[in-house]
Every structure is written in C-alpha cells, then in structure tokens.
Length: 353
Length: 93
Image (cartoon, rainbow over all chains, first blue to last red; front, side, top):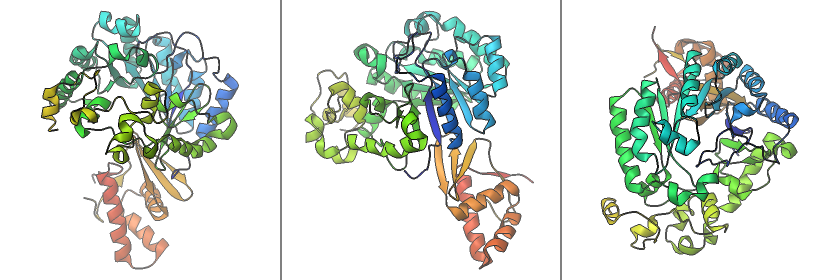
C-alpha cells in the first residue's frame, strides 16, 4: 500500500436497523448480527481510527443512531480532527437527536429518500416517509450540512425526477442517484429490482438537463451505464497499492469495498489493528486473476483488459471465485445475447457495436 | 494562475495529514487523495503559515539554498498543479 493508513473509512458500526429496505446491502434488521463486536471492542476501533489519522469516517449501518454511544463517538472523532459523515435513514431524528448531533459536531448527515410520495417510498423502505421529512427539518434547523442519496431501482426510476424536485424544494444542494447493487437483500430480489438499461439511459439524460438548469450538485452512479458506455466492466481494483479507503464491518473484518464482503475473508481489526488490516488488503488481489476466469469471461478476448470486472459480484451470482461476470454486457455487443438480458437491439446499434 | 505576487489559501474541503515526512491531501468533496513528497510537504506547510507566495518562496530560498530561479519554478509549478486540482485556492488581496 502506498498510504500507511486509509484516508477514509466506512464504519458499518451496527447491523441493527429500524427499517427493512428491500434493497439493503447490509440485510440489516431489528437484531444485531451475533458476531457484532461489543462496545468495548468498538472503542478499540475508535482509537485505531484516531491514532492512524484517518481523515474522514462515514458512520453507517444498519442505522447508526441505534448505537447508543454514537454521539460520544462523533464528538471524539471530530475533536481529533476527523471529518464525520453520518449515513442515516433519518427516521429517528427528532429535535433532541438533531441537537445532540449538532453538539457532537457531526460534519454532515446523509439522508435517503426513495420515493416522492409516502406510498412509493414506504413500499421500498417500510413506513418512513413522514418521519424522514420530519428528521430532515430537524437537521436543517440545526444548520447541519446534508447530502441526499436515492437508490435507483425499477420501482422508483420513473419517479426520480419528482424525488429530486421535492428534495430541491426542501433545500437540497447535493443529491447522489445511485443504481442499486445486487448485494444483500437486493441480490435476493434482483430480477424484480434491477432497473432497465433503457430507463437508466433516460435518467442520465434527465440528470444532464437538470444539472444545466439548477444550482444543484446532482450525480449519477450506475454500473450498468458505465458498462454500456465502455462496452465492458471496469477493472476491479480490489487490494490495489493505490487504495485509499476501506470498510469496517460489524464483526471487525476490514474489507476493501462493499461488494468484497461476499468473500467473507477474515481480516479482523481486533487481531491486526487498522494498520495490519490495511496492509493485508493487498491479499484480496488473489481474487482477481484473469488467467483463471471461467465461462464466457474465460473465453473473452478482453479478459486481460477488464480482468473480469467486479469479481465480488460475479462470485455472488455464480458462487465460483473465478466465475463469469453475469452483469457484463460485452457478449451482447458481440452478438451473443444472454437470455435474461433486457437490452434492446436499438441500444446495441446506438452504442455502435 | 498563481504567480509570485499571488496569495493562496487551503480550501475547507481539503483534509490532510503528515505521513513519514510526506503529506497526504484528501479532497473531501471528490473523495480523492493526493500525495506530496517531502519537498511538496514543506511547501504545503508553508501554505498554512503564509498566504503570500513571496513569503513562501523567501522561506524556501533560506531553507534549501541553491538557485532561486530553480526553486521558484518548482514551487510555482506545484502550487499551480494544486490549484488546478482544486486542492488550493488563489485568494484576493
């Protein structure tokens, strides 16, 4: 690793959550994971983050506000110069919680809204819309910086423009639209949730138009659109020397990125400390070896270029370490369409394949 | 463009730390890090202390000796690269 420690850490501080979003990557629920670390162990992680001079921490979950010491942790981190962004569903933020967050010095709160109406939002997240709106108002009253995230699935893709408008009316300055990833709960319902490529491309146009009109930082992250543009997946950089962030899971395992949790590779902060885990992230490189790729990827002429794309997602779908990447659309461009793919001939034509 | 007459400041979205004599800069907005070698790290520290590029250069001439024109060229090149990458701001007055 070039850096001695990560610049930013995504700390998945608990797996408990009061909601049950249908696309939750963490498959979070009302009860903690049995392997979740104790409070004393979490304090050790807190000290590790501070002593290794991590610059930014995302406190995430589950719902991090269900962790009782969250305010003390935020205060300790910010006091030591760490930038803290709290990722919350927003439903637990009453006036007192907002005040406590402000007093603790949180730098930013990230909210999710996934439908412009209670009916749509709550069909995806569980009953939450009104409490999210109330929480948003309470955070705004405390003058805390807010970012918004919308998880794009087929069920809400036609509503995204309305969500954006609603959030802009509520004072949003930064919104990230992010295509759902087939992990956790989303994996189990992927056929139902995965947005159609045609709709994602339409959404991209809308984002471009919107950006020109409004004073809004609106970003759009989509693996499908990236693959459509490049015609093949981007290279998996898991464990690369130039890594600069990592994820700490509720059981203390440190992973290079969210999808990589599917490998269940033990790299535990309680055994090695943050520095040791950081250095050992390079061992994740063993999961990326184009010479071992199987199936369509093994036969593909681009395998040394894309290296099989996101190997963690391919593993999640195939159960094989070097299985083919079922999300790759390159075979379509080569006139070998997969049966389950919804891409149309027109899109292939437009892409100039 | 930053010149000898410019004044500079570090934008609030830039976080940084020292690491074995080098400096790791982190653009909190874009999420990207940037690594400065030891000389770059010293220039960065001077940007904390002095707003004026003239003062930064004067300090570097004192510390490093050698040809001033060469030091000035290297320093301005780095400051302009940092400006281009949104890691530094040029400030009025």
